Image 1 (cartoon, rainbow, N blue to C red):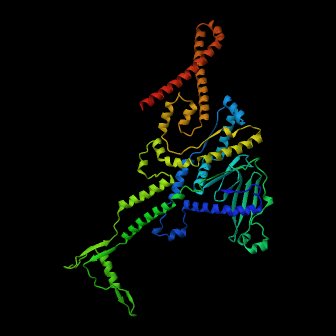
Image 2 (spheres, rainbow, N blue to C red):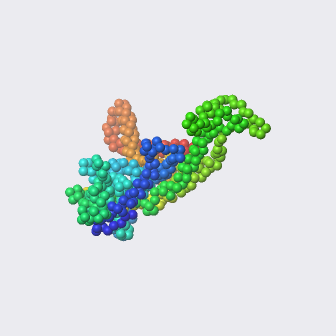
Length: 551
């Protein structure tokens, strides 16, 4: 965590000072990211031998954990309006509550922003950055072309947050280091500093960077800082009171796979040793007892130098390729022919590999998907037990993400309040971080239908785990019921009109009376239509419950 004085933050000497502190952290993150990637160049692949086998368990641990925690986008719901409760909260904490109309507006606003910014994919990449690079960052700005609020992820390989010295700490700057490479292979570094006052840009040069810290630098540049601000690129303030950014940094400063790196190397060595044994046996030496070769192995050439006898090479080749070989044995030497191989205890080897894998998964809190126990996990409850250790690990930093998302909506809603004259309160937003586990849809639907009538319809829909918007679905159901009532009403009116026409034909004097009774008849028909719709819903519910009981 990088802390600095807010008063000195934008000074050129401070930018140079922060650069060296930030670079230490960024270098560590790059090393962790390379361990996660395990990517080899073509030259490295060509030079690899059997002793350089790589098992990218760092990637497995990171992707599995990120998918479980961030595979589903967060869901947002605004607290329902409660006049008595909200009145007390307002008096005690000066908390401006939202009315029912504002609640709908906030929920629609959040949905629009999250849909526009593909919040599901964005959140997953934020979690990956956090687990691999120990931090994640996002920046907010208003698109000048579309006017949309844009949420952008800032790469943790080039971004560092700057906090003040207060308690609790406050974010005072977002520090980004960007390199621009030139044709000659040199590069220029640019620092983008985002504060509540806007963005500032600072540049260095390859010449200054090479000479920095030497007496020659002081002589040529008169002890100037390494980075110089470009006043022309200074951007005006985009947001009002706070930095339009969120920083979530790992409190313990470790990537999720960092504690098990040594165990992963041990697992790789185990596989390499197994491969070496198999390679040795593939190239085993033939042992022949009781056979004396006719030709010696070493002879001398014309110059008196020792060389391998070509005749002996042909003889050995014959021994290796012939299907039948007669060996001369005697009383002192027993004849035998066999391959010289290393005996491998495969059972012990497999047990050792399994032990290493179990310890790796145990210390990284990531479940072992190759475990036979997963095959017996035929329901959600069993799967949740398998992920219990990972859930405990996530609990250590889940609060950081909730805090970060709360800050996001506070900044965005405060901006809307000032621009649109609204009174939206971010404190009423309930944030839910969902876990990504496979679910049995049939079981979920059955369980939800069992509590139908006991719980509100919105709660029942949420129990389905079908990624449905309960509010939207209830609105559709209300509209559908209204349409059904209207259809039933029209049908009954048509049937009633047909009966009236038949009576009119038989007795014309009754037509006037029927016309006078239209209002009463229409009311009766509407009531019957509503009752018919309600009866249909009851019959449907009874049929579903009957089917559930059979199952």
